Length: 380
Image (cartoon, rainbow, N blue to C red; front, side, top):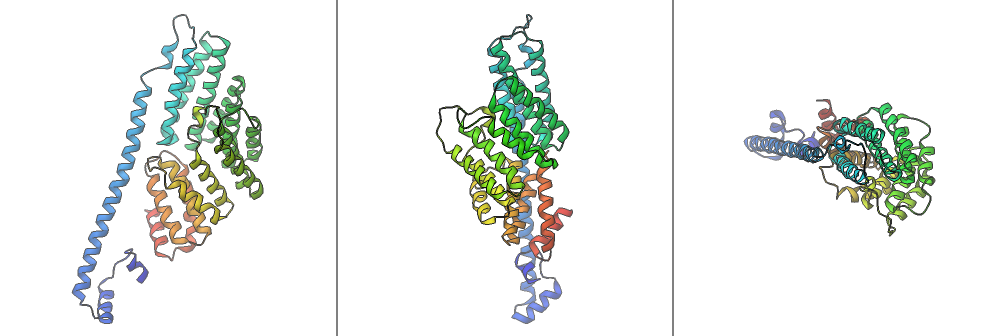
């Protein structure tokens, strides 16, 4: 009870104030005024936090809406001329459009983008099927179809529609092979590996291994190799293979620190040192090595903007898990509270799912005031 008073999770009732007054020689009226003031300050903090959360949601919605307006300016269907000939400029226009669509995923969940991505893929597929073009233009179109199918698959996955995600990923894999683009092929296999981990399939390591092997050790952007090595590390970490995960993480770190003249494809624009550090922390969290997980996650997340709410919420959930493994229950509860804050209004099933897993583990510590308050909040 004293702990709850100190944390202002509870305030002393009249009977408690009378006992405190007698014990410490403080007038009851002074204690009553202190409780009134504490209640008022607590209400002000709650209102400020709610306004801040609403502001973050509004910012995410504004960013998504603004991007959508820009994307709508050029409709892919208008690129078909009366003669149905597609010039070499068409893939460039579609690629730029796809890049803008891709960046929506930074700010909103798959439930918000899925239909947009699927529609875009459908139109591009029709262009490729009905247009007339050179073989070089055809390869470029097939590469764009692969990218767009990956986007559609990722949005479906994020929205919890796993069978639809698999269909799009298989389309991406076939299109990337037809485009003769090993990097895109490797990324398609990495997506399939991640899906396998989620649904409990047994092919995750095989897919991720094939994804890294298809690009070999040279001739591709370091960010691509770092990404595919990271995906393999994740598969090994979630399977409990510590040595193999550590080796793949080292490959990713070496790759991201390498200088290269090979340009990074737009679909890997988000892969940087912080993303590699976050995956490193997540892997060690899965392997229940909190002393390795916590520093990597905390350092990278300190630079992560709240507008990227879904990803930050997910990554914080692994930080909370690592703190639980380290025995720091109160800190784990506080971080899980941030996960719930950031998840508000997101059209993604994943942050809420991760939060439920952490709160289930926290249930064993519900006698602690911060945990009790978190669990009560989650039940509301």
